[in-house]
Figure (cartoon, helix red, strand yellow):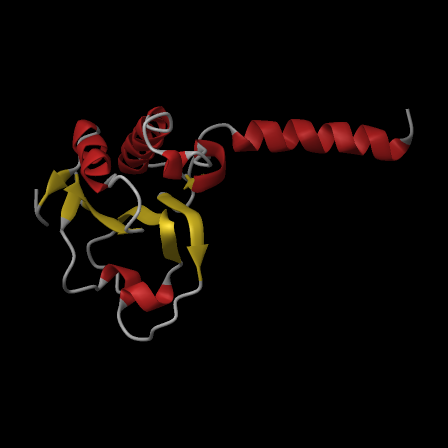
Length: 162
């Protein structure tokens, strides 16, 4: 086998091993492990909805769930926003039949712009805040209710304090 072939096989094995579900955070505290487990449960729940909602056809835990950053970021049939101002101007906007959503677990003291939005529902998981943002195209069957239920089924609660 030529050398490049061996490297290609090794690379595929490494990619497969690192791509299984959500990758685990580096130093892994018990709290991070719990958040990762909840995030993986949420991603698995979203995958189970693929047959009911065409806009989830391309969703994959391997591709859209980032265990290092404790995020799920998914867009289907989206475009660059055509407006300015507000958080919706900084994220992909869905076409009429598309969807974009973002879920993350973060420190309550985070000052990242995405975590400081004043008019979004507030969620929490243990000592973390959970951000859930969604934009849905007008010609889709809405999935936000189903996604909120998946969050709840995995221990995410409404509000900002335990």
